[in-house]
Length: 459
Image 1: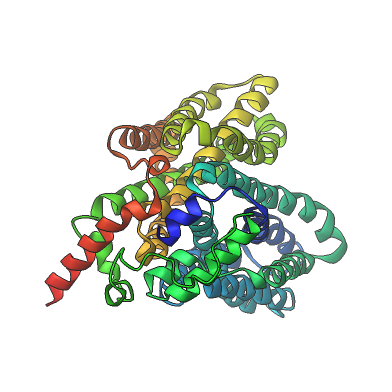
Image 2: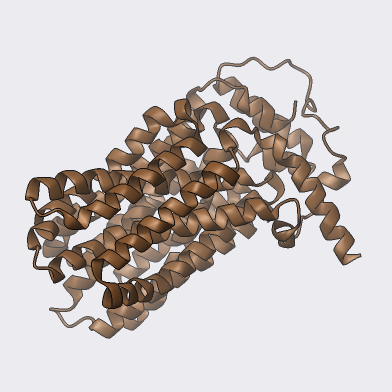
């Protein structure tokens, strides 16, 4: 058996639960720091620390940093190792958050935010990838849901603490909380082992065996003593395994379908989530339905972003990840289409709650399953590329949504968003990759073919 297969065969044990908590803590503080912008920027205007123009630049720099971070995380994780990247990005945005709390001017804060966002963008790629490589595939849907719960709680706590902390300690207190929390998570994560699958892909078999035996012991599985190289070295010769696979393999014939699926899924996840949670309150205010903003939508966001991943944790492993994506995408499209026509406050809250829960579920599974599309040698670069394209899409998405709203009103926007969900749902249903039924090592032939194609093209 190779490393991925041995990890897939393990029962869930102490190691897996500790891993998910530590990865989840990073995701919590990443979400916290990522969503503190609205409260922080609003508080800066009355005191004259910032202007609307500088606030807009702050947001643009944040989006750009998230995209750069996603690309950087993919390269660093595949080149240097998951463990180093896992720690480096968290330390980066933790330290920069503390420096941001001491920024003497908005211009300096914007620069610090840009660098900080690189670490934040990297965390999303690495956290989902760590779940893919360490959690057995039969339990992966549950723990992706748990990771989504951590992210949802980060969003909720950012809003709640902003309401409490900013009046007492100004906006600087929010960056202190985010920075200290990230560094505490960094300290707790310092003892996590390197991914055995990655070590094996680099030809470091003895290190892979040591790491996997440690994981097996924590999972309650006894490994035969005196066998330091039992990781299968016949899966691929060592000189082939250790070869660095260029990123162009993502666009080679055996891999391109997976790459396109990951790109489409990620763009839809991020664009749909942002459009619904970020713009729908504005649509309702334009129509005079202030109750939607003051009661219904805020309540739906606070609970739906936790309820959706919680639902994933309970049902996805039984239903399957591809079928769950199809189901949640269809429901998100349906409820997005009917939500703008709700006028009764109870329906606004009830339908809004279900809508946000479906959007959050689709987001969690979409981002979480993308790393599974790719072999170990370029898994994080594949996931990172998908997130880069998705983050760049977010930069231009306000103009797309505003154009649709100006020309076609709310109906035009919701039809576009619903259409995206339906399109990617159909694509997953009929042409997608079923990661629930596919072990990670079964992707390896695509990696081999990709390597051969790249070598042939460059020779």
